[in-house]
Amino acid sequence: MKYLSAILLIAGSAACRSASPPLIQPGAPGASGREITAEQAVDLSRVSYTGADVRFMQGMIGHHAQALEMTALLKTRTGSDDMRKLAHRIELSQADEITLMQRWLHVRGAEVPDVHAHHAHDAVLMPGMLTPDEMDRLAMASGAAFDRLFLEFMIKHHDGALVMVDQLFSTAGAAQEPEIFAFASDVDTDQRIEIDRMSAMLGEMLK
Image (cartoon, rainbow, N blue to C red; front, side):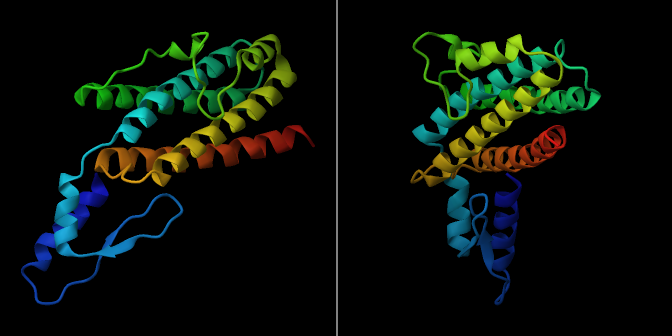
Protein backbone atom coordinates (compact mmCIF):
# COMPACT_ATOMS: atom_id res chain seq x y z
CA MET A 1 0.00 0.00 0.00
CA LYS A 2 3.02 2.28 0.31
CA TYR A 3 3.20 2.98 -3.41
CA LEU A 4 -0.45 4.09 -3.55
CA SER A 5 -0.11 6.32 -0.46
CA ALA A 6 2.86 8.01 -2.05
CA ILE A 7 0.96 8.62 -5.29
CA LEU A 8 -2.05 10.06 -3.45
CA LEU A 9 0.14 12.32 -1.32
CA ILE A 10 1.82 13.73 -4.41
CA ALA A 11 -1.53 14.06 -6.13
CA GLY A 12 -2.91 16.10 -3.25
CA SER A 13 0.09 18.37 -3.26
CA ALA A 14 -0.17 18.83 -7.02
CA ALA A 15 -3.54 20.51 -6.65
CA CYS A 16 -1.90 23.28 -4.64
CA ARG A 17 0.91 23.99 -7.08
CA SER A 18 0.92 25.14 -10.66
CA ALA A 19 3.91 22.91 -11.45
CA SER A 20 4.54 19.46 -10.01
CA PRO A 21 6.75 16.46 -10.68
CA PRO A 22 5.27 13.63 -12.77
CA LEU A 23 3.23 10.95 -11.01
CA ILE A 24 4.53 7.45 -11.66
CA GLN A 25 2.47 4.32 -11.08
CA PRO A 26 4.79 1.35 -10.37
CA GLY A 27 4.65 -1.46 -12.90
CA ALA A 28 4.62 -5.21 -12.37
CA PRO A 29 7.89 -6.82 -11.23
CA GLY A 30 10.48 -6.29 -13.93
CA ALA A 31 8.33 -3.77 -15.79
CA SER A 32 8.71 -0.01 -15.87
CA GLY A 33 6.18 2.33 -14.30
CA ARG A 34 3.94 4.69 -16.21
CA GLU A 35 3.16 8.36 -15.80
CA ILE A 36 -0.39 9.10 -14.68
CA THR A 37 -2.44 12.21 -13.95
CA ALA A 38 -3.51 13.38 -10.51
CA GLU A 39 -7.08 12.32 -11.31
CA GLN A 40 -5.91 8.81 -12.24
CA ALA A 41 -3.94 8.60 -9.01
CA VAL A 42 -7.05 9.39 -6.98
CA ASP A 43 -9.03 6.82 -9.00
CA LEU A 44 -6.53 4.13 -7.93
CA SER A 45 -7.81 4.45 -4.36
CA ARG A 46 -11.13 3.01 -5.53
CA VAL A 47 -9.67 -0.02 -7.36
CA SER A 48 -11.16 -3.31 -6.19
CA TYR A 49 -10.00 -6.91 -6.33
CA THR A 50 -10.91 -9.37 -9.10
CA GLY A 51 -11.67 -13.05 -9.39
CA ALA A 52 -8.12 -13.59 -10.63
CA ASP A 53 -6.81 -11.98 -7.44
CA VAL A 54 -8.91 -14.35 -5.32
CA ARG A 55 -7.76 -17.41 -7.27
CA PHE A 56 -4.14 -16.32 -6.96
CA MET A 57 -4.39 -16.03 -3.18
CA GLN A 58 -6.26 -19.34 -2.87
CA GLY A 59 -3.72 -21.17 -5.03
CA MET A 60 -0.73 -19.62 -3.31
CA ILE A 61 -1.92 -20.85 0.09
CA GLY A 62 -1.54 -24.47 -1.05
CA HIS A 63 1.72 -23.61 -2.79
CA HIS A 64 3.19 -22.15 0.39
CA ALA A 65 1.77 -24.98 2.50
CA GLN A 66 3.69 -27.56 0.47
CA ALA A 67 6.90 -25.57 0.92
CA LEU A 68 6.38 -25.88 4.69
CA GLU A 69 5.91 -29.63 4.31
CA MET A 70 9.23 -29.77 2.48
CA THR A 71 11.05 -27.82 5.17
CA ALA A 72 9.51 -30.09 7.82
CA LEU A 73 11.14 -33.09 6.12
CA LEU A 74 14.50 -31.33 6.19
CA LYS A 75 14.66 -31.18 9.98
CA THR A 76 15.28 -34.93 10.32
CA ARG A 77 17.13 -35.58 7.07
CA THR A 78 19.95 -33.06 6.78
CA GLY A 79 23.20 -32.69 8.62
CA SER A 80 23.87 -29.20 7.28
CA ASP A 81 23.48 -26.08 9.40
CA ASP A 82 23.28 -24.00 6.22
CA MET A 83 20.35 -26.08 5.03
CA ARG A 84 18.63 -25.66 8.40
CA LYS A 85 19.08 -21.89 8.24
CA LEU A 86 17.65 -21.83 4.72
CA ALA A 87 14.64 -23.87 5.79
CA HIS A 88 14.08 -21.62 8.80
CA ARG A 89 13.97 -18.51 6.60
CA ILE A 90 11.50 -20.19 4.25
CA GLU A 91 9.31 -21.30 7.15
CA LEU A 92 9.12 -17.86 8.70
CA SER A 93 8.29 -16.02 5.49
CA GLN A 94 5.82 -18.51 4.05
CA ALA A 95 3.96 -19.17 7.30
CA ASP A 96 3.46 -15.42 7.76
CA GLU A 97 2.31 -15.08 4.16
CA ILE A 98 -0.21 -17.91 4.54
CA THR A 99 -1.74 -16.01 7.46
CA LEU A 100 -1.82 -12.82 5.38
CA MET A 101 -3.53 -14.60 2.45
CA GLN A 102 -6.08 -16.26 4.71
CA ARG A 103 -6.94 -12.90 6.25
CA TRP A 104 -7.16 -11.22 2.83
CA LEU A 105 -9.63 -13.83 1.59
CA HIS A 106 -11.67 -13.85 4.81
CA VAL A 107 -12.07 -10.06 4.86
CA ARG A 108 -13.41 -10.18 1.29
CA GLY A 109 -15.83 -13.01 2.00
CA ALA A 110 -14.00 -15.43 -0.30
CA GLU A 111 -13.45 -19.12 0.36
CA VAL A 112 -10.34 -19.80 2.43
CA PRO A 113 -8.95 -23.18 1.32
CA ASP A 114 -7.63 -25.66 3.84
CA VAL A 115 -3.84 -25.77 3.89
CA HIS A 116 -4.02 -29.50 3.15
CA ALA A 117 -6.42 -29.19 0.20
CA HIS A 118 -3.63 -29.95 -2.28
CA HIS A 119 -3.52 -33.52 -0.94
CA ALA A 120 -6.99 -34.32 -2.27
CA HIS A 121 -6.94 -36.93 -5.05
CA ASP A 122 -8.56 -34.50 -7.50
CA ALA A 123 -6.54 -31.45 -6.45
CA VAL A 124 -4.99 -29.32 -9.19
CA LEU A 125 -1.39 -28.54 -8.29
CA MET A 126 -0.18 -25.01 -8.79
CA PRO A 127 2.89 -24.38 -11.01
CA GLY A 128 6.10 -25.77 -9.54
CA MET A 129 4.42 -27.87 -6.85
CA LEU A 130 5.78 -31.36 -6.30
CA THR A 131 3.76 -34.40 -7.25
CA PRO A 132 3.06 -37.06 -4.61
CA ASP A 133 5.82 -39.20 -6.16
CA GLU A 134 8.31 -36.35 -5.91
CA MET A 135 7.37 -35.75 -2.28
CA ASP A 136 7.91 -39.46 -1.61
CA ARG A 137 11.35 -39.29 -3.25
CA LEU A 138 12.26 -36.38 -1.02
CA ALA A 139 10.98 -38.12 2.10
CA MET A 140 13.03 -41.24 1.35
CA ALA A 141 16.30 -39.34 0.87
CA SER A 142 18.74 -38.38 3.61
CA GLY A 143 22.06 -36.65 4.13
CA ALA A 144 23.79 -35.05 1.15
CA ALA A 145 21.40 -36.75 -1.29
CA PHE A 146 18.46 -35.16 0.50
CA ASP A 147 20.13 -31.73 0.48
CA ARG A 148 20.67 -31.82 -3.28
CA LEU A 149 17.15 -33.03 -4.00
CA PHE A 150 15.64 -30.49 -1.62
CA LEU A 151 17.42 -27.62 -3.35
CA GLU A 152 16.48 -28.87 -6.82
CA PHE A 153 12.84 -29.29 -5.83
CA MET A 154 12.60 -26.02 -3.89
CA ILE A 155 14.11 -24.07 -6.80
CA LYS A 156 11.48 -25.66 -9.04
CA HIS A 157 8.85 -24.79 -6.44
CA HIS A 158 9.94 -21.16 -6.26
CA ASP A 159 10.06 -20.92 -10.06
CA GLY A 160 6.42 -21.99 -10.02
CA ALA A 161 5.55 -19.12 -7.69
CA LEU A 162 7.13 -16.72 -10.18
CA VAL A 163 4.94 -18.23 -12.91
CA MET A 164 1.87 -17.61 -10.74
CA VAL A 165 2.84 -13.99 -10.16
CA ASP A 166 3.47 -13.49 -13.87
CA GLN A 167 0.10 -15.01 -14.73
CA LEU A 168 -1.59 -12.69 -12.24
CA PHE A 169 0.03 -9.54 -13.61
CA SER A 170 -0.68 -10.70 -17.17
CA THR A 171 -4.42 -10.94 -16.46
CA ALA A 172 -6.34 -7.84 -17.48
CA GLY A 173 -7.58 -5.89 -14.46
CA ALA A 174 -5.84 -8.14 -11.91
CA ALA A 175 -3.35 -7.10 -9.20
CA GLN A 176 -4.61 -3.50 -9.23
CA GLU A 177 -5.79 -3.47 -5.64
CA PRO A 178 -2.91 -1.99 -3.61
CA GLU A 179 -2.63 -4.80 -1.06
CA ILE A 180 -2.46 -7.64 -3.57
CA PHE A 181 -0.14 -5.63 -5.84
CA ALA A 182 2.27 -5.18 -2.95
CA PHE A 183 1.98 -8.80 -1.84
CA ALA A 184 2.50 -10.31 -5.29
CA SER A 185 5.45 -7.98 -5.90
CA ASP A 186 7.00 -9.04 -2.58
CA VAL A 187 6.53 -12.72 -3.46
CA ASP A 188 8.29 -12.15 -6.76
CA THR A 189 11.23 -10.37 -5.13
CA ASP A 190 11.61 -12.81 -2.23
CA GLN A 191 11.39 -15.92 -4.40
CA ARG A 192 14.03 -14.59 -6.80
CA ILE A 193 16.41 -13.87 -3.91
CA GLU A 194 15.93 -17.36 -2.50
CA ILE A 195 16.35 -18.98 -5.93
CA ASP A 196 19.70 -17.22 -6.28
CA ARG A 197 20.73 -18.34 -2.80
CA MET A 198 19.70 -21.96 -3.37
CA SER A 199 21.27 -22.09 -6.82
CA ALA A 200 24.58 -20.96 -5.29
CA MET A 201 24.31 -23.63 -2.57
CA LEU A 202 23.49 -26.31 -5.13
CA GLY A 203 26.39 -25.21 -7.29
CA GLU A 204 28.78 -25.67 -4.36
CA MET A 205 27.44 -29.18 -3.72
CA LEU A 206 27.89 -30.21 -7.34
CA LYS A 207 31.52 -29.12 -7.60
